[in-house]
Length: 395
Image (cartoon, rainbow, N blue to C red; front, side):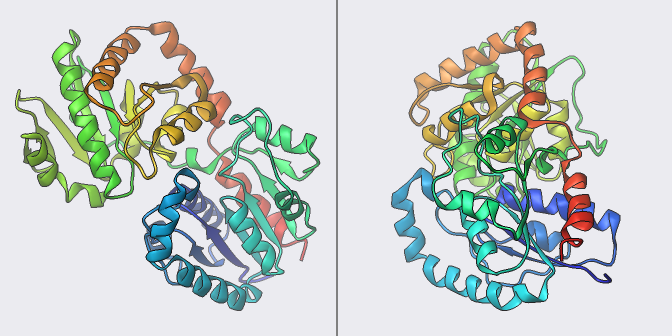
């Protein structure tokens, strides 16, 4: 079949990232594919950068897609036009889906249900679920029906443990081939200007504003304490989204720091370098990660890095989210505190950072745990091959 047509659905920044990796893998296999996307949450900038047209209106909502973490934010989403936006998106999806051969959906029950409602064949990457959370997934009544439907050609999971659990629960199509979020982490080789005699700590404040700005302020306070109490030589790098770089002046002012060309300078002269386009390089070079992020924390764990985290004010990275992430990612994550971090929690965290950097056995165990929880790279290519070989054969 010439000019195979694939429609991508996703509902979150991490989900957009995964679909973006699958799109890149597909294009490496077949340059003539016709693709379009519908990001249910957010602006879908990853699709735009790849030149994939977006079929529906987009908008960044107050919850950032984290409704389940704080039901009250749902009311803010409604006030911001959630119902009208979703209605327009559904109308366009139903209108356009018949013009596509197959849907590739990444996310949770919401995108699975939308894919089912189109009456088109679909493949799903269940990025939002893992049996590591509770030991066994509670699928409810609707999700098994959506996954066992004849038009659902495959169910890809984010880890092997979940695939095995789903198969035991009767979802025979479940399989784990690797998670696409591990496929965009090859260093570019850019010079990070690192001091070879100093350990490097990466700072991941998240991707959604204004929350990422608040998280970075909190993490910079932590960095200041770490630098004051550490006997080791340390250096710090922030992996920021482009929209956060614009806020560095305000962030510096709020802390009594200075900002010069992406470098934040503390009152004691500590320099923290911020970059918006060096995520993979920073993560690979890090000896330890201070993370208040979703997907980025998972990627850090997958690379074998120790991640130390503190709860923020949300709406996304709250104690509830961080505690669930701890269950998902296991021993590589150390969560300090059960409430939004105050001075006491920051001092405890700083001590934990120093202890962790000196614990060679623990650091080795993070390498093993990362492979178990996140798998090896290459998942995007395997999913892309499935789409092209199996997806279209079923037509």
